[in-house]
Image (tube, rainbow, N blue to C red):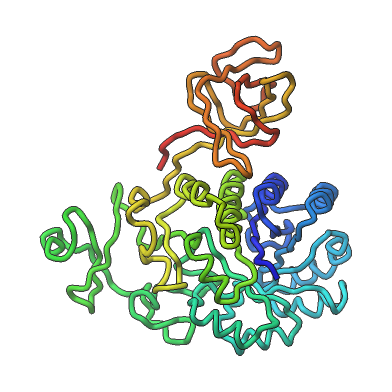
Length: 427
C-alpha cells in the first residue's frame, strides 16, 4: 500500500484545510468522547458538511474515541452508537479495550479499529495480540525507537503501523512519565521508575557552571548527583524544565518508510488551521519527493520553522527522547525557550469579484504598506507589497479588519481559499 499522510482536524475549517493541503486522511473527535476535549471537535450539526467534504475529496476519515471510559461515559457511548453509525467514519481510534465489543456489536464485526498511541504498544508481542483482537492498525507508543519498529513490522507483516511524525511531545502523558528514563536511564513504563519528579534540586551557582557550561547558562543539580548538571532556560524567574521539545521527522521519512510504517501522523487537533495547512503541505511534498525527485520539497520544509513551535527534535526514534536537541540546532536557535511564531495568519482569499479584485475573509488585521504572503497547496508563497484594500463600496481604505466586507486588489494571480499571512516575531 502507499504511505498515508494523516492530519488533525479539530473542527470543520481544519478538516477542509487538511484535505486541501495534502492529507490522505484526517482524524477528528466527537464532542463527548474525545481525549482532546478542548479542541473544537464535532457535533451532529457538522454531519452534513463532513459527509460532503469526504464525498468530494474521496479521502479517509477516522474517529478518535481514545479516552479511558468510566461507567457513565461507557453508558453514554452505548446510547450514542446509533448516531455515531450515521457518520462516514472509515475507522475508530481507541485505547480502551472495552470499546471493542461495543463497536463490533453496533457496527459489525468488520469495523476497522486502530489502537491509539495512548495504549503504549511498543513491542511485537503486544502488536500481535491487538491484531488478533481485531485491530487492523496500531499507532505505536511514541517512545518506540526505529529499530524496534522494524522488528514489530517484521513480526506482524499484515498489521498496519502508524507513528506520529510532527507536533508536540510530552514529558508525561496518560500517567506514563518519561523523566525517569531521561535522567536516570530507568523506564517507568517497564516498572523501574526512579521517581525523578520527587528528587531534590537546586539551581547551581554561576561560578560552578563556568567550568561545564557556556557563559550565561543555568542548570539544576540533583542532591545525590553532585557535579551532574541539567541545563535549563529561565526567564522572569521561571524555567521550562518540564517542557519537552517538539517532534519533527520531515528529514527522516525514508527511514520510517523503510522500517515498515504505513501511516505518518501529524499531531495538532488543538493547533490552528494555519498550522494544519502548512504542516500537512510540507509533509505531503516531502513524502511525494521520495518517489518523485523533481519535487522541491525543501521550499515547503522551511515553513515548519516559521509556524509556532518549540525547538525541534526527532523524539525517541534515534535517541533518548524529546528533551534532546537532536535536530536543527543551527537553524532553530531562537526557540530554546518558549514558542516562536514568524508569521501571523491573517485569513483567506475569497471569490474574485472583478479582474484582480478578491473578497477577503480575515481573521487578523492587514494594512496597506505591509508585505503579505499568500500560500497555496502547490505554491510555497506569493509575496505582495503593492496591493490595495477596498471597502464594501469599492473605495480605498488603509486597513481591513475581521468581520467586515472588504476586498484586496492585486496584480498577483490568486486562488479562492489561498491563505494570507504577514511577517511578525512573537515569542
